[in-house]
Length: 460
Image (cartoon, rainbow, N blue to C red; front, side, top):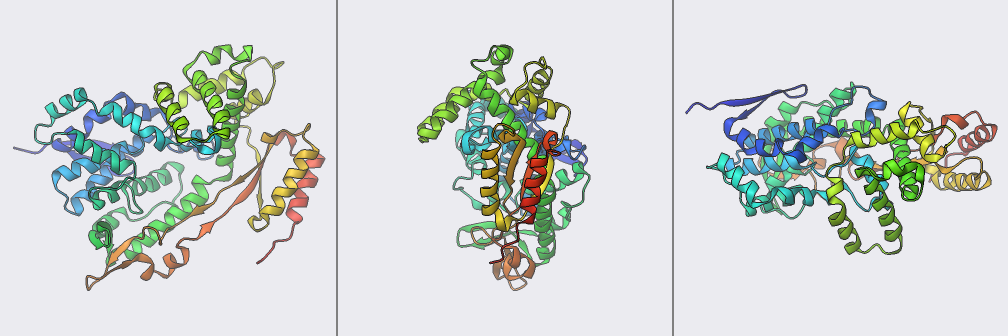
């Protein structure tokens, strides 16, 4: 029988070809409402406010991730049924994201609830007898069972895997997720930081033996491209994911939603919002945040997830954009923190960014605390925000990338690479102030910034 191909044209990978069998493995998930919702969740949050082309979605990325996983699986020689599992897991790995991706997690007190916490509830919606029956009718040779779907969920949720090499394709330092998002985010942002030779890396991938069984690693010929890939990830983090103005805008969004949530239930001006799906969810978030401060018990978190999943699973970027537009158009006589933040986001009124010496962060924090106390009535917290962005380019101790050399010996990548050895397990820090444009010309703010910038760097 002639094998037919289902083709998806992609700006990053070009022509993504799926065999007719692979198409049947993933299409029931792609066509589901949960996966289609990802079309309406941008990959980089408010990144397109800084990089106008960055309007790509979690939907695009998950398709690319699925394709990348299939390519890795074929290269290292996985059996069809194993390839089926990693393709489904890679496709669904981001299914739990809320509006604006990671930014939305900031509305929860100390980020007690993240997108991974919602993922099992989405997966449970697939793991039903009706879904399995329909799926297996289309896949008579490759049935999906409860046991197989449990393996898929374990790979997505970073739980101990039945077979480590499969889990590595879904989540590791060489996973399909990172291989796709670096290239995709770089392309749509219009930068070249995230580029690396994906085809050569794929060619150099191999199954290697480790103390924990078979793992996904590389041959010695891939050392150079992996160095390039890890540096690309570092530069994308510093210049794109941790872009100061992007993070400042996303913090403004979080402040807007938090302030709104705190007053939504009682303020009559917000009655129309309170009756929406997003409004009901924000009211519940505010109640959860107040309760979790006093009692961070795990059962309280579980109860919130179970109770409010029905609202969360329907939310996307559009819900928040409609909210922002509505708030920004309220009568100007009703002006407060929420409406002011909404107006700034609606009209892209960017804050001023002042980079700080991280070495003196403790001194800066104390000075900022004192300044805010002195001018509490003049400058609310959201107009003067300290934002920190720690990140690590490569973790070489916990789970190193393994390399098999010409003699078949296996060693961590850092043993072969001076550059990676220097980067390994190093936490890099950036700190900055986000200052609302409406106050940057205030003499008190100007003097305060000059004071911070005059603090000498303390070298240990």
